[in-house]
Image (cartoon, rainbow, N blue to C red; front, side):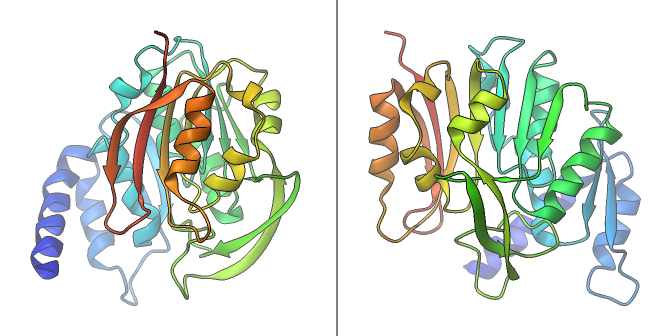
Length: 270
């Protein structure tokens, strides 16, 4: 069954690639040469929506491009509905910038603050934001979000993997220590009026959210959050905290193992 799912997934990506990228012949070539002596270190993706995105030629770095722009994994139109056109957005766990690029397209007047802990990933976010002329609207912070201001230590693959973090698979990479700020700090740095929060931080979500000041969530209308299995914590802690500040679940997609999934939440205005 696992092999069948793998073949089906590969077939889907093969179908999606020409529809998603203008330079699909080059993309196919670079994918075919992956893990060979002719492999290129980086890949350039020229999307049909006008964006150009550069990524390491590594599975963990590439897949969010497909998830965001081909699968619409965040349900962007639904997520951004009810958010002001000029709102402030926090992208917490920016990886190579896919979500911020999609948000900039969906909300063309929004201001976006991206937080990415991995030094490698943060460098790619900056490159991709600059390459698409969005630096006046998108601010990249090369730091982690944590429950406390200071430093944060986690496993970093060094190749911009979407799986960097506390719950990284064994052997993914090496531990790194980077500057860290709190959610409260990030809201203040953004100037307030944060209406949309996306969070994908591979297990750090419990520390970030549960130690934040409820007042920092006062303007937030929409949240999309990937949650992860973390010893000593349960998803109910997060949903109870957010419910107490008026933000409740509207959609839930459990993942492939216990404690893993994606959740969409919205402010209760009734």
